[in-house]
Length: 289
Length: 136
Image (cartoon, rainbow over all chains, first blue to last red; front, side, top):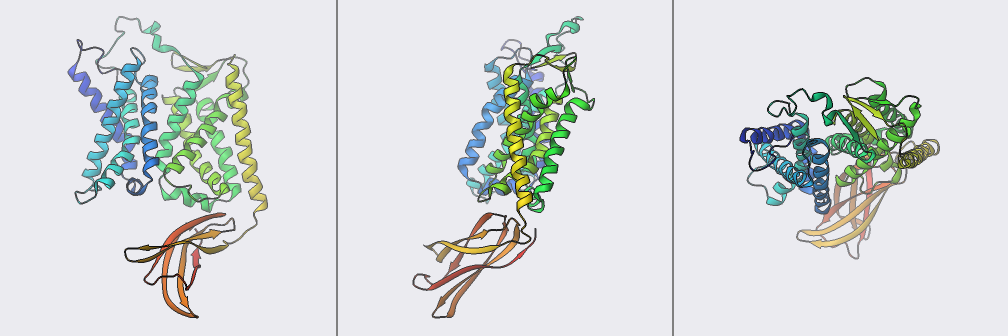
């Protein structure tokens, strides 16, 4: 739902309601990361070019996400860009507030540290703000089909393009990955595991991913058209989704310096272990978003 | 393409060829990863880490001489809490020593750190070697 459609029918309570939902979303999604020690440390020491790349990549991500999940009815790219900037700003603001409130940011720290910590946290927080505005938004106040036209509401009959499905999976994977990728547990797990453990995790991730979307009857789960064998969906959606989860995992690990100076097998192992939550996130995103 | 109809998502029965190509490429990559890891599972028979140290460079800094080192692990087994000891010798007698601890040296990988000496290592014998480790 868009917070305002034009200057004339600007609704103040709706606008602030949207902002509040954004902050709620940022808190809901980013608090685990705001309270993770490694995220504070990364904000201080991580390579500034990698941080910049992450911050820049977040902009198109938010814009597409805004276009894709936020505003089905009156969406234009201009509105998507506007809402993406609001979400980013809310992410920065709420990260800064929380980090100050929990005593991680103190006045004796250098601006280099403070900016780094806030900037890094703003990425998950802004995604949270964007999702919060769309996913936590209720129907109250903007009931567009009160005249009984709900049955032919275009929102109930829409198609998601293939690229759109893959994008949603990437967002879901990114979300869970950002939560766990900075923690030391990820590298520690990859060191504890043998290659055989990794193979089991790969098979388990694929099975969990496919099951989440097709087998378990969650709300929003997917069905195949009559007469289509189930391996079709496995090849067309689950395998590409797993690959995306893997690529997002690799990107997160590289961003957080978790793959520096590592041998190729070790990198594969840590990508596989991080892809496990990533795959679950990707599958869940297809159901929820 | 996925069609959403009254809360149900139905995958299209006649998908675009791009969906099959993407699926096929993904399948190949996932299989490659499985084969790669499986190969290591069969071939790697190492039971313990194999660590050795190497001096990368020496630089003069505000408070002494900074020796950057790397510890290489030639085995597939990861070592944690690797103690590294650097010694500066002149004609057999130890002039100065310095220690550091690396959190992890992953299998078939390297990890680096620095040691700081008061005296210039140039012209003297400098050794950097791992002295102890834990299992992760």
